[in-house]
Length: 289
Length: 253
Figure 1 (cartoon, chains in turn orange, purple):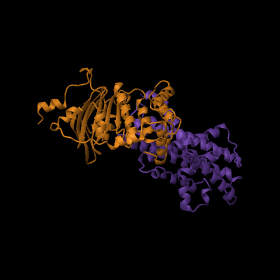
Figure 2: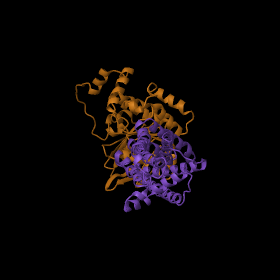
Figure 3: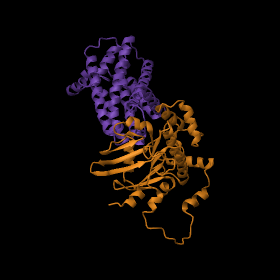
Figure 4: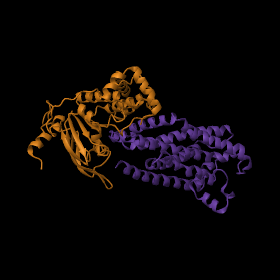
């Protein structure tokens, strides 16, 4: 069905320069299937995620991205297939898998009644990290939440909440992080902040599996992109490889208009403490999530 | 991993207790409402009730304690339901912790917070003239019965919290429990009730529990009541715990 040329394009040898071929992938998924009653959500999903890379899983709403992340983070058992995370089988060794991973985003959450600092200290103590308070304060400073650390999370803006959520996921230095739609519902500035955090994670050698429905997000962040459609991975490759799937680019003259995002960001300007506080006040009214 | 059970449960208890102490609503419902009910029954209705004790507050206190616990556990279900909805339940389950600590955190919080309300209500009862000749042993026995009652009901609350599909549903299960003491010997002797009602009151768990506590406070022999009460409590505890585990496994499968 597939010719060898296309196969090589879709499954090239590991790219990232220093990648050693003897290092097993951080995530290896083979033939995962899952149904909810009559609804066959995953019909045999296969892919690998190289250690230290950012892998974007694209798909429309209901494509099964979250189901797959829940399976990989041991919250849900697959009907068929196997998966290894950090070398541990999700079915046979879920405890070791949980030591290697962190989950954040769409359905992981923060405790609204606790303060930001209390949330971090709680996770640090559960992960048996030494000096939980120092760890919490370090993360608050790193994620621009030092001033808000003593306030209840219920008063945070959507962006602050997501930053706290990701900060909680970094405690204990997990080698694999699942980010399930990490920028859904965020304003453009908060999105860019989250993107910068993800880039920082990748630079530090953490493997990131990111699910998103925003194509530009995958384009900006991912080393490799896969599209989950109707229960299967229909393509899996680098952005350059995916581009070759379409007919060669033609050159045409287009007048470049600024995007609305560029207009918004240039008008709103860089994130200043004042802007941050305004965002918090908005969030107070809205009560995001 | 499972070597962290105690420290994990302790972290969960600390978290959940903050939810209790930071919510005025919880404190008012669980402590002030039973106290208001006690004031109403002692100072408004009590004069007309002949319960066979010198002071009606002596008769009433055990039942009020049970009502406060029955209304307190509604919040246990409500908090657990909130954890499931917010997603923090899943965050905990994706972490390398003792998974049992997630539910035990709520159950321990239920025990601690209900014992605090019970202590406050007993103090108010003492101010209202409640007197007991009970010694240390009898007090410990009363505390043990109330703890067992709270533990059994807390696991019932876990079932409700896990299975509910709305916040109202999560706490609604406690209404019959709050109502049961009214059809028991908690407020008036059962002999004054019409025969079918008396039969129900005599054979439901609250009457034997109330009678046992009342006998312990009065330094009277507890008789068969204590065994009937313990059988009810242990039975409810076992059934509720097993059923809660079944619902929990379905939830995280």
